[in-house]
Structures are given as structure tokens and as C-alpha cells.
Image 1 (cartoon, rainbow, N blue to C red):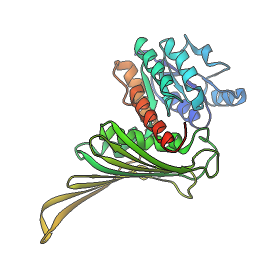
Image 2: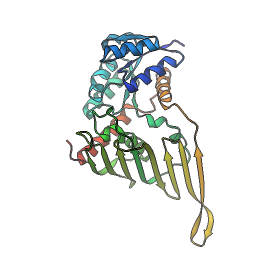
Image 3: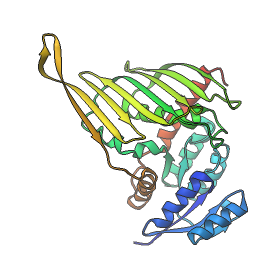
Image 4: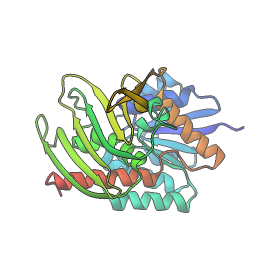
Length: 312
């Protein structure tokens, strides 16, 4: 099997990790890296034994697949250049700035038979895999995603920076259109919302209460799912899953017996799993695990939340 030729566009904090994963995977050649800071590109290229390029367009014709890890406002332009040339693209979340931009990229990928995957990393967290056979029809979902303040990622507000992870997960497991949204938020350290809460009501009756903050003193990524006869707690950060299910019989009259199953999952490299899934889709010609349509749907809901916050 011939090696897939890859590159990473944007090797800041996260892009550096993308480049490291490609360099470490068998049957993959990291052809090069690009960054708007030439010194940074040269530094990463030297460390990984590859080349630094000044312009992402120089790589067209030299690569089969790329990771696009540039600031969100450049997602559309960079990804468009590669997809137009039939190059497979893994793009970081959010997919683009606007729905029109997302639609154009999805159409280009389909026209040129290119794999177009969106980097919603939590989809590759082992706690989601542990839901197989347990999750049925969620009635109410509560999620909390909080983190200490970091300047990285502040080109967008907390909805597009952090909350969008949970939006994607929730829409993936609820599988119903959004009916209405209420939201509140506040800018604290930046000119954008740094903390926000959204109440999302789906057409099938499920309700999700979603909170995200990037001005907390600790990190936490938890979700609670309530369905008929069961309660599920997911701890994405510590890889823990708790399932409390109504059992047979009663502990006392009128008090049902409850079976509790708590599991600590093994540590996993979600980014490597994400990239390997992307490469497998390319080799096998199968749809990506997180498609452009998934990324578009998460963006659409995030933008609706922003409108509910009073943003255009």
C-alpha cells in the first residue's frame, strides 16, 4: 500500500500535534507544513524531518490529504483551494464562519470525490463509544464544559470555541431537528461571550441545557443524559461513564431497585484516532465519521445560539 502524502496547514498549538501524529503513523508521509510565521513553520518542519512551505497552494499536486488548522476566518479559503484540486481535507472546528461557506466546501468535496472531515474531537473520546447499547431516546441532557482562560481560540466566542463540541455530540445522539433556542451569555475577559448557556429544544421533545465557560479556575467536560428508566453520566476529561438503570423489583414499596454500573475507561489518543479515521476513509472510500454535513449542522445551531445571544 503506497504511503499517503499529507501536510498540515497552520502549525500553532493544535496544528503542531496534527503534524506529530501524521509523522508517527505508518504508511503516511508528512510532506510539509505551512504557517503564517515562517520561523514557526521551519521549527516544526525541522523537528519532524519535513519541509516548511511559505504558501499552502505550493502543496497542491504534492499531497493527497491535509489538515487545515488555521484560524476559523481562513478555513473556507484554504480548504476551498485543496478540495477544488481533489485533495482530502480534515478541517478543525468550527467548519467555517458562515453556512454559505460550509455549503460551498461540502459541494466541492462531493464534486471532486474528496473526503471532507470536521475535527469535532470529542466524537473520538472513548466515553462516547461506551454508550453503544445503552443510549436509547434521550429526554433531557445537561452538559457543562468549562476551562481556564487562554488567549488561544479567542478569535471566536465561547459558543464557537467550546460549546460547539457539546452541540455536535448532542445533535449526534438526539438525531432530531432543533425547534427553538434560548440563550444567555456575557463577555468578561474578551469582547466576545466568554460564558454562555443555551437551552435547546428539539422537535422530538428532548431538551438540552448546555453551559460553556472559558473563564473558570478549573477544567471540566461533563454531560448527563436522562432517558426512560436510566440516567447516564459522561466525564469526557477523566474518561468515566456511570449508568444508573431501573432494575427489577423494589428496594422498598414504591422505590425501584437501581443498578449502577460505573466504568473507568483506558486512556486514549483522541487526536490520533481522529486522524487515523480520516486516513481510513480515504483508503477505503467510506464516509468520514464526522462529515461536512455534521460540521455544518453544529455550526448552524451555534449560530442560532449566537443570534439568541443578540449577535447577528
